[in-house]
Length: 322
Ligand code: SF4
Image 1: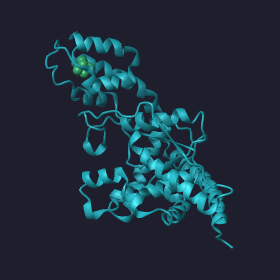
Image 2: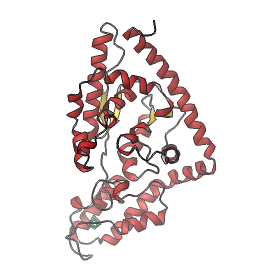
Image 3: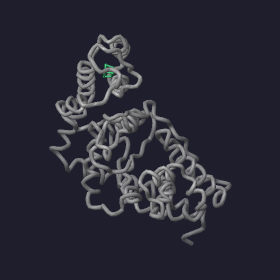
Image 4: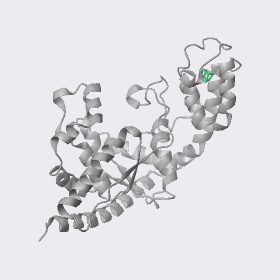
């Protein structure tokens, strides 16, 4: 995950919560992708260290157990840069130009001629991030599946070229998140840059105030008007945080018995309930910031150990270091 500072509910539902569950069944590696922020925002680097600390604090508060699953920073494991360089040598430029996510970003950010080499090749850096730890499974949203495909192709190509008899890299599979998307308070994708988020660290009052302003079904103007839950983002929040009452909320909304004010209040209560243990852990971490720094230092140490082993296999396969 790129270090963008405090996380929002969309980050939590789309990724973080899933990682917490997965750490019971898998050996997880949690990468703070700080170099990746430079692909589109290379001018602003000063805020990255602070953003890393805020994000990792949210990760731990949400339940990532750093003893089980190392948390580490990409730029502290320099081997990522070396593997990225080597993989860039074996990928065709045209393959990267066909990346649908890149095409979307070029259009949305109006980049046209301003796409940097780093931006074009970021799926290669992602491939290095995954392959370094011989990742077999990568938890992703559906929109990230094309990137996993690039990683699979690169792993296959490396193995075919340099290690046909004893493959170095597995071809990873994407593991789709069960509850992939949470809309922002205005109905668009939840994103900090769109200013439509509920932050994981927001207080109960902030959560209630933000939800009061959330857009709902435009056809439900008065309290007793029948509504359409399926076009209302608040109903999406109920489905996530208030599963037990969704049937009742649906019928109340559709019949007009339930007004939006009450519906949003109940939704805010459930979200606050869900986040309370996370807030408690966050407060504790904020009182002891050195703990977060120690977690990262230990994660960096463990990641560097694994990376050194992988790179020695890479060097041997390619015939370097004679
Ligand atoms: S009652 Fe609830 S689900 Fe229905 S439109 Fe209002 S906020 Fe949305």
